Image (tube, rainbow, N blue to C red):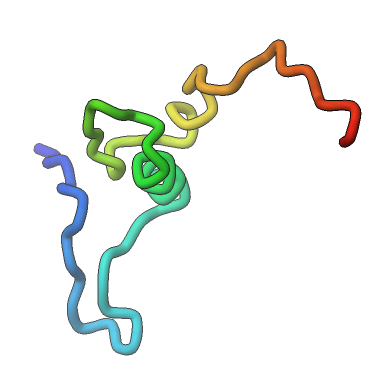
Amino acid sequence: MAMVEEEGLIYHGMEPRDGVSYVCSAYVAAAYQAAGLFLPGKINAPEFTPRDVYTLDVFDKNFKKPTIC
């Protein structure tokens, strides 16, 4: 049976890379959370898969670029 990895799990014994470890999709989800994208809620970033990150409907699809750009 699989268990969900809790965010913030510290890995030891892999000098000099000790610390929190993320796969790419979990890292992006953690960065989004740190930026406040999921406020007022909280997510567990390691549960995110690449598909989850791609299908988050968080960007404005009708964004009009300013003329100065």
